[in-house]
Length: 452
Image (tube, rainbow, N blue to C red; front, side, top):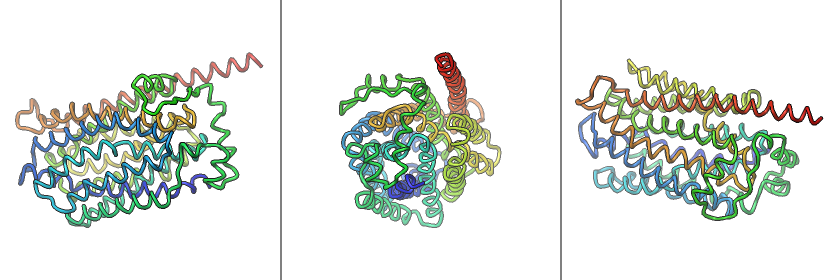
């Protein structure tokens, strides 16, 4: 456990970052509606503004995140992590000053620019940092703990917002974000270029005598199933470099497909859900906060307790399948919700869907060398960002159409059901991946038996 304890400072930064980022989420829908369409519960303009913001942010993150990840392999994680943590404070500070229409549109522009650097970058760099310090055998549990700490920040921020006025919410969020940036610079040791995952690095960073055995495990018998790729020496990866990396093994290519379809459904749900609930059941800030509290608590319990226990037993591939099944159920229940309490029940399934991203990232991390963690995680984050570009383009007009008076039939949750089918495709791919991996494993075992 000492290798996980050595990541404590990173976990503090992740908690503070997600606390400040998510505590404003319950209030932002009402702030947007009040600035764009005062006094109304349905507003297509607000939906399109949110969709445009998500699309532009995703487009920028698609380009920026792999570059940031690759630069962190060269210059270190801490230096590159400082950028998104600091930039994320700016939009919070704007709405902490005022929430009038003028301030909202200034926030809107700054939020787009900040999202380009923050969307995916902090998560990508945090995962690479963890991979630098934890061997492959314990990496799934470590990734789960990181996600659990992030979920704890989400839960704590949402709970705090539940008892704060809207004006105080943004002020507290800006203050906590600033504290996170200061803590990062003051206490988090560097990792990446100057400190690679070898015996000397383990001794200096974690003071753990067992670390050398964890490092040696990264070159274990899994190489037959997840071959290490030749290191990429450049600073700015080209699209062909990223394609070559992702197609270099079955695990990476399949993980990329699962990430795309699951992220497409996930971002589609995020695009539609809050406006759908406001139109269908009249949800406001407090109801949104209650829903997010349930989701955050389920995710935190899953990633801090359930996943670390079951990951070594059943493996991350089985956890991925279970998580995707829970994710499908989660989204479909939102789409067919027949009463105001059904979304609360649906949110509880996050205890299963929370397995998805840590399981994917663990598979990816095991498939590349220690000097490629940044670019590999950046490429997966870039694919997720690409899905976040497509999702608003598809789901924003679909949501606005089915929440309007010109809908072809009365089914306000139709766009959410479409998002559910995207997650269902990811679930089918994960089953095929496991079957293919089992087939390869059997062939390898047969060849080794014949050679013996």
